[in-house]
Image 1 (tube, rainbow, N blue to C red):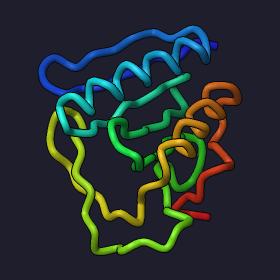
Image 2: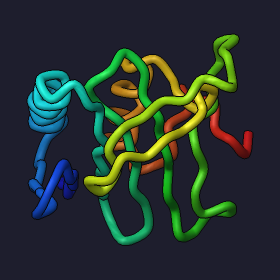
Image 3: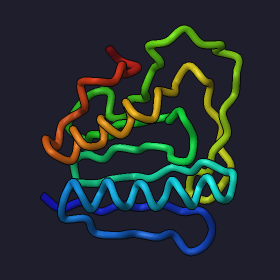
Image 4: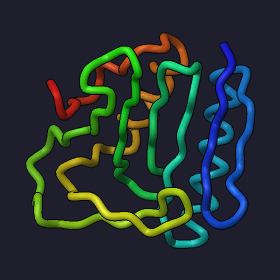
Amino acid sequence: MKAQVLWETGMPPETREIASAGMLEELLDELTLQAKEADMPFSVQIELDDDSAILITVGSEISHMEFYSASHRPPIVASISAESTDENEIITFLHGGIPSTVSRISCVPIADARAAVRQYFETGGRPTNINWGDS
Protein backbone atom coordinates (compact mmCIF):
# COMPACT_ATOMS: atom_id res chain seq x y z
CA MET A 1 0.00 0.00 0.00
CA LYS A 2 1.22 3.53 -0.74
CA ALA A 3 0.34 6.75 1.00
CA GLN A 4 0.93 10.46 0.54
CA VAL A 5 2.04 12.21 3.71
CA LEU A 6 1.57 15.99 3.89
CA TRP A 7 2.68 18.54 6.49
CA GLU A 8 3.32 22.25 6.63
CA THR A 9 5.38 24.08 9.20
CA GLY A 10 6.05 27.05 6.94
CA MET A 11 6.13 27.62 3.22
CA PRO A 12 5.97 25.59 1.04
CA PRO A 13 3.99 22.55 2.22
CA GLU A 14 5.93 19.30 2.19
CA THR A 15 4.88 15.87 0.94
CA ARG A 16 6.42 12.45 0.81
CA GLU A 17 5.24 9.19 -0.72
CA ILE A 18 5.40 6.26 1.68
CA ALA A 19 5.44 2.65 0.51
CA SER A 20 5.56 0.73 3.81
CA ALA A 21 4.53 0.91 7.44
CA GLY A 22 8.22 1.05 8.38
CA MET A 23 8.78 4.10 6.17
CA LEU A 24 5.75 5.77 7.75
CA GLU A 25 7.07 5.10 11.28
CA GLU A 26 10.49 6.52 10.34
CA LEU A 27 8.95 9.65 8.85
CA LEU A 28 6.71 10.22 11.88
CA ASP A 29 9.78 9.82 14.15
CA GLU A 30 11.66 12.39 12.02
CA LEU A 31 8.75 14.85 12.06
CA THR A 32 8.31 14.40 15.81
CA LEU A 33 11.94 15.42 16.35
CA GLN A 34 11.42 18.49 14.14
CA ALA A 35 8.35 19.52 16.13
CA LYS A 36 10.09 19.01 19.48
CA GLU A 37 13.15 21.00 18.34
CA ALA A 38 10.87 23.87 17.29
CA ASP A 39 8.81 23.45 20.49
CA MET A 40 5.63 23.48 18.39
CA PRO A 41 3.58 20.38 17.57
CA PHE A 42 2.18 20.26 14.04
CA SER A 43 -0.34 18.25 12.06
CA VAL A 44 0.54 15.55 9.58
CA GLN A 45 -2.00 14.14 7.13
CA ILE A 46 -1.76 10.65 5.66
CA GLU A 47 -3.83 9.93 2.53
CA LEU A 48 -4.22 6.45 1.09
CA ASP A 49 -6.69 7.30 -1.65
CA ASP A 50 -9.24 9.88 -2.77
CA ASP A 51 -11.78 8.60 -0.24
CA SER A 52 -9.97 8.82 3.08
CA ALA A 53 -7.20 10.41 5.13
CA ILE A 54 -6.13 10.60 8.75
CA LEU A 55 -4.59 13.52 10.61
CA ILE A 56 -2.25 13.22 13.59
CA THR A 57 -0.34 15.90 15.49
CA VAL A 58 3.31 15.17 16.30
CA GLY A 59 5.72 16.71 18.79
CA SER A 60 3.80 16.19 22.02
CA GLU A 61 2.76 13.38 24.37
CA ILE A 62 -0.82 13.88 23.17
CA SER A 63 -2.25 14.12 19.67
CA HIS A 64 -5.35 15.62 18.14
CA MET A 65 -6.62 13.30 15.40
CA GLU A 66 -9.16 13.55 12.62
CA PHE A 67 -10.44 10.95 10.18
CA TYR A 68 -11.78 12.02 6.79
CA SER A 69 -13.91 9.89 4.50
CA ALA A 70 -15.97 11.00 1.51
CA SER A 71 -18.09 7.85 1.71
CA HIS A 72 -18.99 7.96 5.43
CA ARG A 73 -21.25 10.28 7.39
CA PRO A 74 -20.20 12.48 8.96
CA PRO A 75 -17.31 12.95 6.53
CA ILE A 76 -14.95 14.31 9.23
CA VAL A 77 -14.69 13.01 12.79
CA ALA A 78 -12.30 14.10 15.53
CA SER A 79 -10.75 12.02 18.29
CA ILE A 80 -12.23 12.17 21.79
CA SER A 81 -10.13 11.48 24.86
CA ALA A 82 -10.99 8.34 26.81
CA GLU A 83 -9.34 9.90 29.86
CA SER A 84 -10.89 12.36 32.25
CA THR A 85 -9.50 15.72 31.10
CA ASP A 86 -10.10 19.40 31.57
CA GLU A 87 -12.17 20.34 28.54
CA ASN A 88 -11.26 24.00 29.10
CA GLU A 89 -7.54 23.28 28.56
CA ILE A 90 -6.50 24.48 25.11
CA ILE A 91 -3.83 22.75 23.02
CA THR A 92 -1.99 24.70 20.28
CA PHE A 93 -0.34 23.18 17.21
CA LEU A 94 0.47 24.22 13.66
CA HIS A 95 -2.07 23.14 11.05
CA GLY A 96 -1.27 24.17 7.50
CA GLY A 97 1.56 26.26 8.94
CA ILE A 98 -0.88 28.35 11.00
CA PRO A 99 -1.33 28.11 14.79
CA SER A 100 -4.55 26.24 15.57
CA THR A 101 -6.18 25.30 18.84
CA VAL A 102 -8.34 22.44 20.09
CA SER A 103 -9.74 21.47 23.44
CA ARG A 104 -7.67 18.93 25.37
CA ILE A 105 -10.72 16.66 25.34
CA SER A 106 -10.12 16.01 21.60
CA CYS A 107 -6.59 14.68 22.16
CA VAL A 108 -5.41 11.14 22.75
CA PRO A 109 -2.07 9.73 23.99
CA ILE A 110 0.53 9.79 21.21
CA ALA A 111 1.09 6.02 21.50
CA ASP A 112 -2.62 5.46 20.73
CA ALA A 113 -2.47 7.96 17.86
CA ARG A 114 0.57 6.24 16.34
CA ALA A 115 -1.16 2.85 16.63
CA ALA A 116 -4.21 4.33 14.90
CA VAL A 117 -2.08 5.63 12.03
CA ARG A 118 -0.54 2.16 11.59
CA GLN A 119 -4.01 0.60 11.60
CA TYR A 120 -5.22 3.11 9.00
CA PHE A 121 -2.18 2.47 6.79
CA GLU A 122 -2.70 -1.31 6.98
CA THR A 123 -6.50 -1.40 6.55
CA GLY A 124 -7.53 1.87 4.92
CA GLY A 125 -10.40 2.08 7.39
CA ARG A 126 -11.16 4.26 10.38
CA PRO A 127 -9.05 3.02 13.31
CA THR A 128 -10.98 1.21 16.00
CA ASN A 129 -8.60 1.96 18.88
CA ILE A 130 -9.67 5.64 19.06
CA ASN A 131 -12.90 7.09 20.44
CA TRP A 132 -14.33 9.24 17.64
CA GLY A 133 -16.73 12.16 17.99
CA ASP A 134 -19.58 10.32 16.31
CA SER A 135 -19.22 7.08 18.31
